[in-house]
Image 1: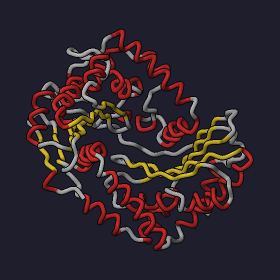
Image 2: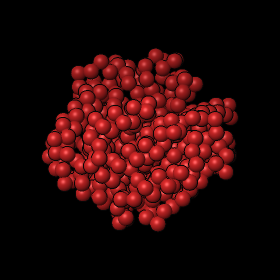
Image 3: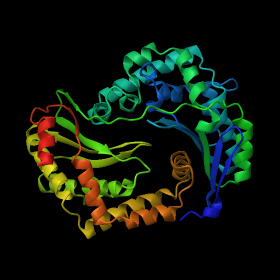
Image 4: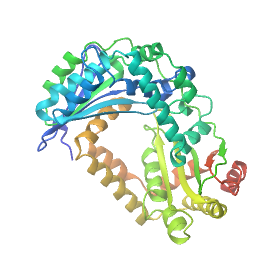
Length: 423
């Protein structure tokens, strides 16, 4: 497990937080700027701007061209990337330890001196439109956007991360620049690094390369209000893609770990209840799994399945029966398997500088402190079968959300599903 003495945190007067972990016996450094802003911070007119900004970050600064950014990092064998989520946008590099300063320089440069060149912007607008088109052509991907929108209708939490085609086509350069100025403030950014480093060196790099971040605080996002609902789209597909879900808990809730273990034993692996009953015993699906998605103030629990039109009629009653059964009892053996899976996933991730870097940033942004690994393991170990059953009862008696895409005429109506769960 990581040693607490190797983890250090500094908050600069500007509000920028720097957190590092020195990892012995590695020769690389992962370094990233994690911005506490994402899709849920956007207005309806801005939907997709966080993701658009992520793309534009690599398209040129006052000192570097788009090609120059790529060439400079790859000339030292480094890797650079970014992602956008509902509550966070991240920009990160992985480099050899001797190139840490270059990595910090490039990340700082794209966050503080991007030019949003009009020609590059129009070119990237086309790339994003292609990305949206690709997502729309991938039913087992886009179904989750429809599920999210049905769960959180007409609010930021329910809007797609990529935005819409019409919104991206119409989005002016000023929207990107204004959003970045408001949300990419120093107090909204955590600079995290893990690997062969010293904390003092990373703090020095932060002071040099992130000094031009704005200091005005960003406003809070609109609270997520789960409502639940139904989305269906009939498409000529070989399979119907189904997501059935429920309101769940956020990161700080007492039932966070019971819900995580519930998801694992219900649909988190080949030994899980859903996989064994629906795929192995009945052969109704190729893919079925459950997921627990927490947010700062809310969460979602869901089950995904892809099945043929003729199998769909049998699948839903069987799945609902498993949701009823798990509310009645959980065995010590299956909980032990779920604990082992979750612990192993956590501990294996700590061997990666990139994963460790991201975990540090998220812990600071969500909890305001670094969570010792031993504390997390202890909380996972402390979950009992009664805790999991209680979490299941709280989840599956709430109003469900259903999203389907494909030949889904044999899937019952949402009211019918809700009635079967309540029976």
